[in-house]
Amino acid sequence: MPSALRQPSCRQVLDLLPEPFVVIDRDYRIVAANQAYLRRYGVAAGEVEGRRCHEISHRSQVPCSRNGEICPLETSMATGRPAQVLHVHFDRGGRAERVELVVTPIVEGGEVAFVGERIRPLADPDDAAELLVGRSQPMLEVLALLRRVAQAQVTVLLTGESGVGKEQAARYLHHQSSRAGGPFVVVDCSTLSPNLIESELFGHEKGAFTGASTSRKGLFEAAHGGTLFIDEVGELPMELQARLLRALEVGAVRRVGSTHYRRVDVRVVVATHRDLVSWVRSGRFRADLYYRLAAFPVRVPALREHLEDVPALAEHFLRRMEGGGRFLPLAEGVVERLMSYPYPGNVRELRNIVERAVVLAGDGPIEPEHVVFPEEPTHKPDPEPQGKGRLRRMRSPGPERIREALQRAEGHRGRAAAELGISERTLYRYLRRMRADGD
Ligand SMILES: Nc1ncnc2c1ncn2[C@@H]1O[C@H](COP(=O)(O)OP(=O)(O)OP(=O)(O)O)[C@@H](O)[C@H]1O
Image 1 (cartoon, protein in one colour):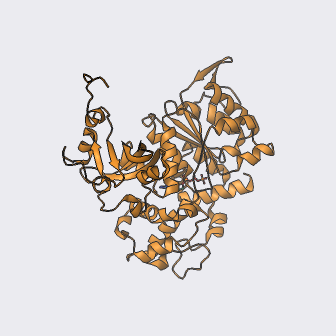
Image 2 (tube, rainbow, N blue to C red):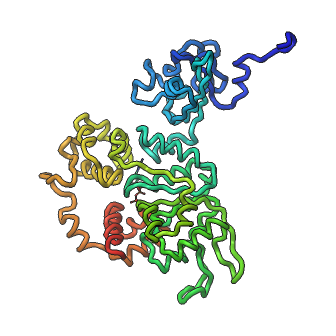
Image 3 (cartoon, protein in one colour):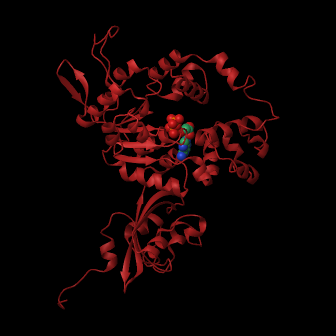
């Protein structure tokens, strides 16, 4: 290098980066940090070098791998490759925030001597963390995928068993995207009658069919500027599959007059619990639509694959219930019992079990025996004394009323359930029954 050529210091270069950035050695010691890092974690300049990364951002004396988290530094040191994970950090005020860490190895003499760690705080951490609870590795992977795809326009296909949180994942995606300020519109193909889906999705002009006395906006249009979540897309009839494909490809979703279409700006997220690949093979689902939808597939894991999230989920549901906070923290025996079950109904079933435990606990604390799994007889008073089957036969509002309520609520199951005077859980049971009966 010519002697006259001066170079800025490593710190000066790092200060050019707007996001917190640190360089860490093999012993977790910070060797350089930028201004954004110092500000975020409340460390004075000159006091950061030599301190361990986990002491500052995790408030922990031990590396995060010893607290059950994946340490991206260790991964990168071991593999020599970049690593990306989501963690919870504590900012200067001690507030927990979700961050995405992108760690890149710095190689010296053939081995990784340091890593550079870029820290990206996730938008609106409290809300987002509430939307999709769970910090197990499978959930962190889902969160990372959703965050990565959030800013793109690509259609996302969410797969996974019923009740795993696909709709919740779609809400998270919307929340993380630049469309978060726009509408999030849900349409559930399994609950709309086949001849109404078309007008629900795409709207209709006055006089388009008998009874269409006014023109009506479709859900695509209602989602303009936001996200349209099409749930149970596998239930879409063949002829509408073609229409959906066309809408996705040209963005033309509403016919105005005989030749014009109105374009809308909508991000489409679809979900299914069906095995669409085998449906494509058997001719029940259009291959061209499948390939269009599967551009970015995200599988939401079954709860039995991440039972370690059960305590956090249970506490989340308790906090959301009126007065549920008084049951926190849950006793160890209760947590153990909650974690001993495989949850075939996934997160929805866990929520129901927690709600039931609250009823059974009455005025006292939740005890392990209040956690009742379906196959077990209970000796406690039944909050639904008529039993599930009987209740369904006696009180079901009927498929027609359910569909109408869902249409009025624009697919929002909570609002539809409220209108029908039943719980969301009961509505789900009726819907499942309708699906099984082919209604
Ligand atoms: N990770 C999560 N964090 C918080 N709540 C969750 C999570 N996953 C699921 N839930 C809650 O569990 C219930 C079921 O979730 P959701 O409706 O998103 O499942 P789904 O996979 O879309 O189900 P289906 O296939 O039956 O439509 C909802 O009350 C949702 O709020």
